[in-house]
Image 1 (tube, one colour):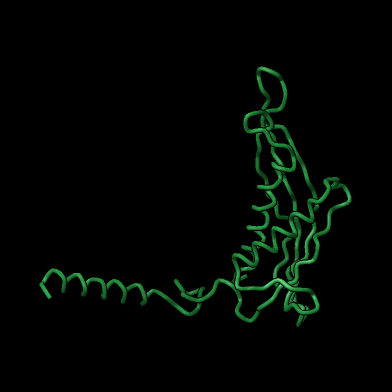
Image 2: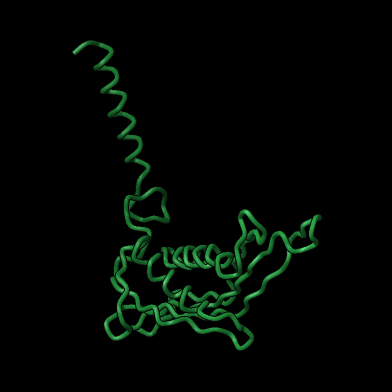
Length: 178
């Protein structure tokens, strides 16, 4: 082995040793190779989300519940199952849905860009002990969409991005430590 190759191998080993020295089994004490999620939880029930009394958009709660199930299955080690078989339950409500115009077309005077805002509340509860793990009384998620051609979208299409972002942010709350 030539001197340059040997020096490169030794440098690589040194970098690896320094990197591992910064890691910890406890995520609150620096870098960790451990899971971001509590290891004592294996399953989550996600019942259909509720809607507030002043929310008049159809199927929004169904779309959010489906997005949450997909996001949990994709991003966490948890499996989604029924409440009777689950360790925990993620229950929530769409409290407020609002939409506002951000800009108008100077040519037509019609809305060009709108914003959809969801205000959500949710609770993640351990069904084995009855303990509330996470409680979020007011999570606000918003995004804009274009209403005029060639990128035209309606409320359904415009709210899809907000729903997926809400699911992503809710699943972030399932990470430890709380």
